[in-house]
Amino acid sequence: MNIYVGNLSFNATEDDVKSAFEAYGAVETTSIIKDKFSGQSKGFGFVEMPNKEEAENAIQSLNGSDFKGRALKVNEAKPRENRPRQGGFGRNRDY
View (spheres, rainbow, N blue to C red):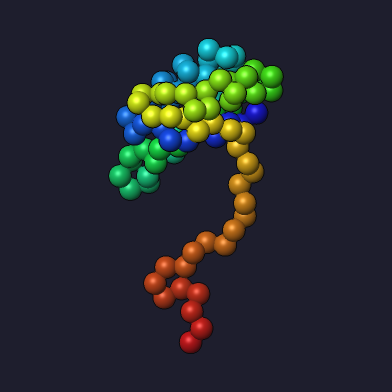
């Protein structure tokens, strides 16, 4: 199950997040989303857990809990929508 983890502290590492979720079961992958220019965390990430029951238990237990001074927002990740990219200056204009 793919799990969304929001409201992460900007100094939380992937290892920190993985350790928190491993208390509830096996973790396949952990990723914190970062700004592509600065490399700074965007404050959210994803955890992949293979066992649905363990994942649901982790979601129930960790949602709203304090993690490095912030209350986590944890829920099942929704599939990413295919949406058109926003055009920059000079794009998508009718001349």
